[in-house]
Length: 157
Image (cartoon, rainbow, N blue to C red; front, side, top):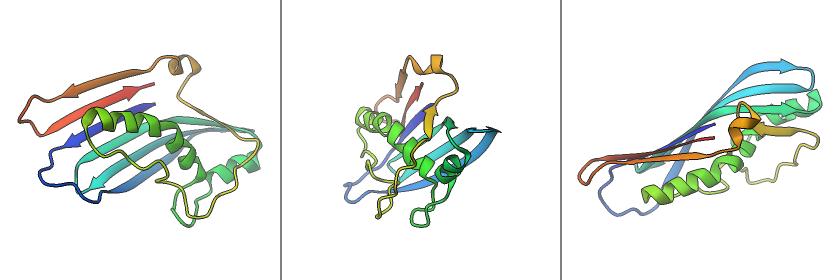
């Protein structure tokens, strides 16, 4: 999984900050009781202060009907339940990056709908391409010198 945060120069007082979300899913592989999904999640603020991009793969294992429930689009937030799980997984990283970059953090419940969705039982979601890649986390911070307009922080797990 890759996580990149980009601070955009913003002058002025920061009042209310809204986060916009764009998401993309792509089924990479499907077998009986298993599906590998490639995902990309873009978060940006209004006013334009920070952008986050998260990409990687999620492996779903379980009954085919339960996997299909994870991929169904929620009519309220227009995103599959799988993205709620992915967001829960990457939220801490985005929160830490926002602290490093001195930007507003995204809300922890950004992708949740007002009504509580029933959890899908019997489906396991594993993030990352391989288990050995999930053992270590590297956070690279590249901040521009004073007077520059951007700072980028990235994480790869």
